[in-house]
Image (cartoon, rainbow, N blue to C red; front, side, top):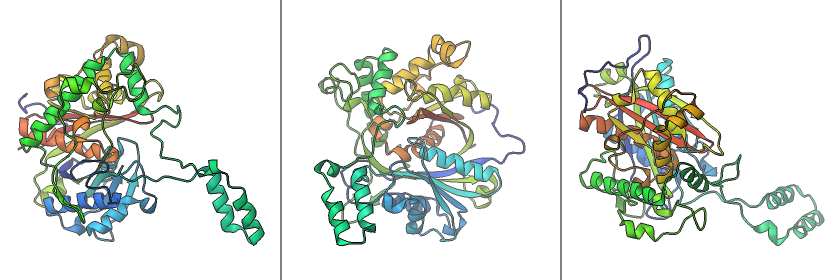
Length: 437
């Protein structure tokens, strides 16, 4: 790793914003130990874990921002319900944001903005996703009938409405994993993207296996120190992610394509799985953190959000966001010691790496003279990623940022880069600077 003699990214006239600490619940396969909870239960567990780890007085937090993607109807502002449940002061405001897989990134950068603007000194950001239970609605026609029944005054009116119900009206509507604007599922898009960049099934399976092996190694070496133990009401204490399963290439080769049959390359083994989990981070102005006696883990520096065509470039966010944020910071790819990219699909990661390494792509689509350059694998997701650790949509962003901070500390690097793609053809990247040890 390069010696931390490189320039710091502090800006004159702008407050230094620091990550004090970050935690997450274990990420579990949906339908396992968390199956009977509600999203705010998981978010509350992450918040309580953060309070416990930092010893933070509950009234010292100025604001709370949480991300979530699939909303539980009863707790539409899940940030507020989780904060009250975790015992934060009822005087601390809280709001919930949504931006697909970068929802907690959006929560964290909202926190950075509040601090940089001088509105707050201490903000808790986080994200929660609970795929074990999702809102399933009646069909539109059935909803219309039920709302009319509510208003019907006479028995005759009620009976005639009941008589209008057809069997077809009873089929339910599930939350879509499809892009609203294109009606294409993300897995289908990932398969097309992999094909467009010539990513083979073998390369995808190899990358997925790498993710699981590195995650297992990190878990066994107790490097995943952001994971807190959580006593699940009526169940056991959980203290580790349960989706890490290094298979063999032979086992993975047996799986059929999940989205494009029969010739697709994206399978259940090289895609991220449906996951339940929550994360939380404490973000402060540097002066406030030091005044309270904290030793911050990292500085949160420049960040960008990007958007592309959701049809053919749905998952290329990291390719577009990386050069933009590096340019903003005055850094090059070589300055980055630690890379943490969200792994939605192995095919999506490989396609991004190929796009970043392609002069043609840089020239044709990005208006660059040359390629962006691909991150070296020895610096890339070395403690596993979303394919193995799991991907509770809105909780992943905080995991990425906390992992960068921990890896920089462990490896002695100075700069880290987080990047992620998200539904809607959106993406995000952030530069993180190690806090001097």
